[in-house]
Length: 144
Length: 409
Image 1 (cartoon, chains in turn cyan, brown):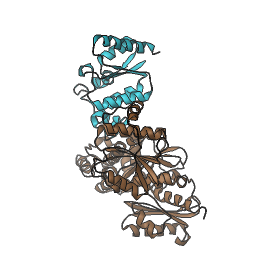
Image 2 (cartoon, chains in turn brown, orange):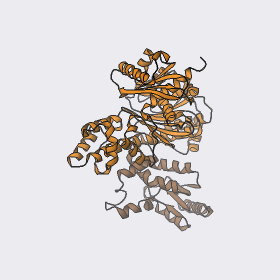
Image 3 (cartoon, rainbow over the protein chains, first blue to last red):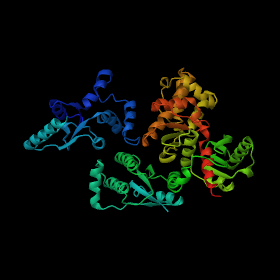
Image 4 (cartoon, rainbow over the protein chains, first blue to last red):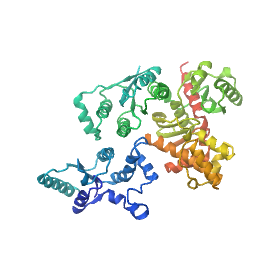
């Protein structure tokens, strides 16, 4: 199944989803095309005006362009997702979209989809980490 | 008295609360504020699924939930947040969707600045009140008797004479002095219809000049253009049942209205930017030295991609077009770029504020410019319906609705 991960650039969540036999929907996948087809710097520096315009599907014109640009990349992944995992309060290095408003909106969009969803808190100890991985494993294995 | 529930964040501290209330009072409505218990806020936010940091936005969500659950009695909803607040803009739109998906309450949204005045809110408040108060009138699907409609727009004045659900006379001219323009158009339309003014059983008036003309002509209906135009549009397009989206790009302002069975349930209205209006196209036509009615065909032969437009502005946008002409781009391409620019701005500033429903009915003077219809089609990915006499929606709608006053006489 296609699993949206939040933060969408989390390598740990990406790895866990793949490891348990599902397809992670991530920033890396969404920007792959841009990396391969445009000659400009590395992503997301090659997000264009047209991309930001596409973000209007998810948020109005008064919403800052950075949010709309991000939603133009992540929004279609949410639309495509068959299930999702949200990690609450992750530290910077865990994988972060860099904009709290976008994160709020993404979580809202996911919750609105009414698809199987697992929300976990970022673990602060080894025991919590084990429990978290266990929960993710159980969730992913329970998806048909 | 019509009760409009206010779901907002920042209105008090922006200094616009009194303006909101003034606008509501002037159309016979009252702003009300759903009471909620403190404990309800967290539950509402959790159920809603969006967890904003701003406490007032959290309260706004709880109030919206209270309304849709029928725990607070209101007739319409006004949703507003500060212009430029990202979190506010996100919540405003989602609360609007939530209320619309879960209730039949008419909604209008607005993002205010400290300069927002009651006058800017008046048409929106008036439309909310009309939708609530005159539901039966708006549900009319057929015109009866002999009635007239006058649409005193910012750029043109249009008149329609209707008899037994048919347009039998029509006329339009550029708006000069408001009363004179209305008188002249009315006389010409009567002439075409072959009837006398004394035979007209009811007159309906809409548009910017509606109050002064309505008073002079003793009109039975004096109504803002949002509801009148949407009624006229679905009548002309023969789409009175079901859902539709009406796009009305006018001379000075634009309207995007969604309707269900001919009754508007959401609308946005632009109006401070000439770059997104018929005025911009007029300026372009003048610069290209063609008549405005030739612009559409020119645009259809051009390619907007060949013109580099950095601005929508009617000053700087025109500058871009002039620069392109100087670089040897054809006038066809410039015409296409102008139409594309207007469509793009309408799309970016208005259509994303409403959920576009099929079919799309394009009306207003600019719908006669074929390039403009093509540009909207390209933007939305589907062909809009342009009904016959599409520039007469306001006049036709006013004549149709005013006939509602004849029954029972």
